[in-house]
Amino acid sequence: MDRTLTRRALELMDAHQPFVRATVVRTVGSVPGKLGATMLVTGSGAIFGTVGGAALEETVKEIAAKVMVDRRGDLRHFDLQAWRPGGLPSLCGGSVDIALEYVPARPHLLLWGGGHVGQALATLLPTLEYDFSVADDRPEWVGEDRFPHADRREVVEPSRLWEVFDPAAYTHLYVLGYDAGRDLDVLERSVERFPNFIGLIASTSKRMHMWAELRRRGVAEAQLARIRSPIGLPIGAQSPAEIAVSVVAEIVRTAHPEPAERAAAREEDAAPPQP
Figure 1 (tube, rainbow, N blue to C red):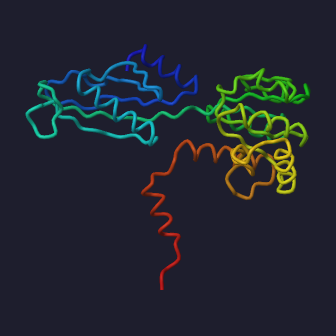
Figure 2 (figure 1 turned 30 degrees about the vertical axis):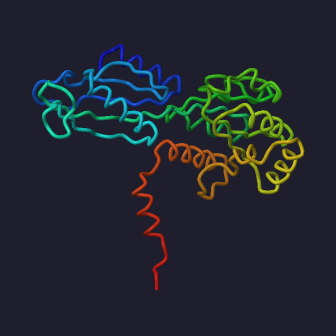
Figure 3 (figure 1 turned 45 degrees about the vertical axis):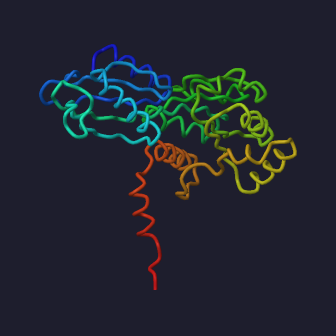
């Protein structure tokens, strides 16, 4: 892959956009795209680079769209011989293998609340190259001393959260605040304006009271259903560090969905024996 295309891939990653990278990994005979030729396909259908053009490239674009939906890579063989059964409408005469790699959007987290869980998360996220920002209405809780690796550290009232931050720029919002009333204000505004994952740290009792108050404020059930609480994988986490591990593990699992056949096999193994 050339330097320009490498820069483009890095730009897409930095912009937290998923894409598919299609690369020619094997050639036999005469083919338009030489070994290493690469094309990037974004979720919006934008194309950068080439694997050879013509019918081959159009077919790879279609496959890349499916890879984007399935979030699973693929390896395809193509005969560029129109006279052969299954061959592409091409007269090149050779054949080519193309690897399609799904590159997921790099997580970009917004943490509401600079408390202990937020700080524990901020310790783990850089090790995975996950970007994050922190917001709180208490200046002493969002300083560089607490969050040295944060992209942004903003002192902001809940009512102005989405004036200061662009909701489309983040993949996850975690509400980790110190005050239920502040958390409610953030949630009420976020279920309408933030399009992606919303997670709330709360006990069962706190969650029940907050849900009741959100309903009283007119938040619809469909919007409430968007809020994930409790957050993280159920590993029995108790301390802030353990909660951070469970949250990060949940993000990793979402980024790498289990293949359907493996999930089905797991369910089959877990099923009780039939009499």
